[in-house]
Image (tube, rainbow, N blue to C red; front, top):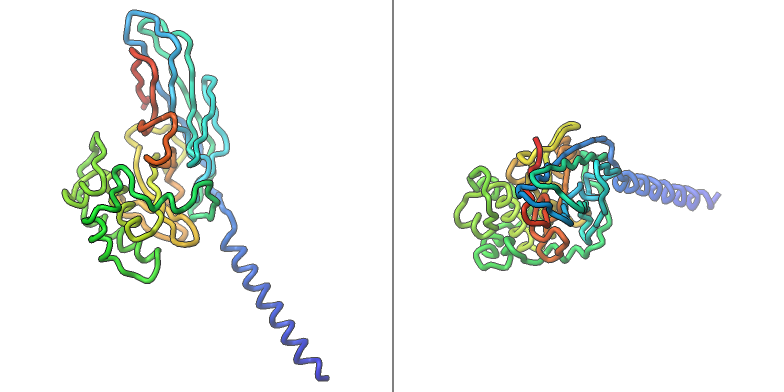
Length: 298
């Protein structure tokens, strides 16, 4: 009879372990449940009266794997070589031997994705600490940005990021599209910019508060569609201590929970001046060959 308390104690411990094991298993479950197909195309035109040889055309495809995105397949009208950099960016590289005078080539791309309305935990090839460093346009070590960041004192990364998000959204007046990136310090002082400046200032303030943050470029689309250059947008992912969370300070989209808006963001570029690839500083595509004009088709 004296063994019963030990039995019930053991049973209770087993049930507790099972409960928390199932709980954390469900929290960690990877979930990409929204299928999405996106297409985009480009016209390459020889604008000279001479044959142009050995043209290289480079274009970003959707990022291979993010907390809200899996790129499952890439189809193209022309043969390409796939280049993947350390950040997971995917670059399609095309080579055209000859392009006759005033002739054109239309390159068509179709990708199949699985998107998610939750931020999934993913493993990174890059140390999280790399996303704490200042870089071009993200002047997180500037005294004025550090001073502003010190105003955000909360209990954890998530609440600090939320406060920064609200500040950036209210501080910057949306200017409409700007041709040239101005950066975080410009946005702080001038209080204006497009989605890029919202991204840069949010990132700089997070990094100044020791919150890892990534800058993202891509497209916003809520259905299977043909991507247009006007769909291009910038947003961020910050690390809350457990996982990377997608948020959009320009469109005032912030949530750590399930939200369908996350399944509308198609990342084509994780932006970093610390990790260069063959695209250099081009954000959508790059042409190597004089006399060739490239247009992203509508």
